[in-house]
Image (cartoon, rainbow, N blue to C red; front, side, top):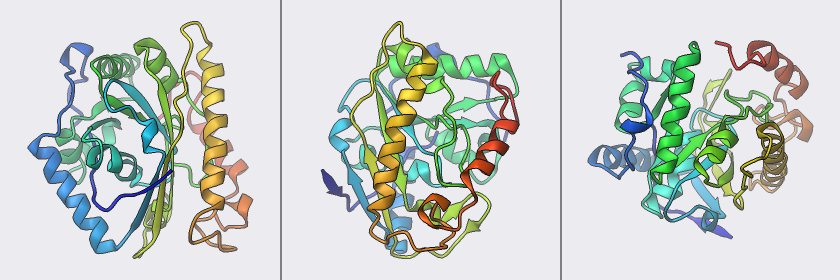
Length: 280
């Protein structure tokens, strides 16, 4: 199913505030702050003349909690991910936002207005608080967006998935909706900064729900989710309206593009983020 959306919306959720707990979480509404952010995003997309193609929106539940697991390939993933749920379903999305985003004077106000869940990876206790807050939001019936890769992939391929997304879904008893986006990296990607990208196609595909069994291994469930999203991403990349120009910086090396080799990016990623979940 292809759903060309003509209007926009987004959800984002000084210093990182005290971590939320499940008691602090209430089902999020489209407040006036949300409407202001949405208006700004609509204006940006219209001025940029982006052609946003939303596919599979029927897989996103109209009510009740769900984890939206997305590939992290650009600085605007959050805009594209929440576009259709906000505009078409009138549903907000809680994002997990790391402390650097909360601390930034440029982005801090957005995550505060969007009531994102703060994440501080420097502390085991803070990570546990963020996990509890996300589970509480899911239990309350919210959509919670998680990037299982934990960081932006400069190869534009999926990095190894962490288990947080599946553990949240398993604990809250909600489905995971796999989401892949493609195209927004042409405007703003890690390592290349902001580029001129007028009139580009941006594709967002929501896949069928992935259910995690109560007794299933989170590691095995995360591997299953990554396999599903790998297939989805490859299909979206290969069918992208602007193709995959040879040598283009925004195209993966696997498809003949000029992006960094995935093996090198993955190796650097694994050195940065240690198996115990710690890291910068």
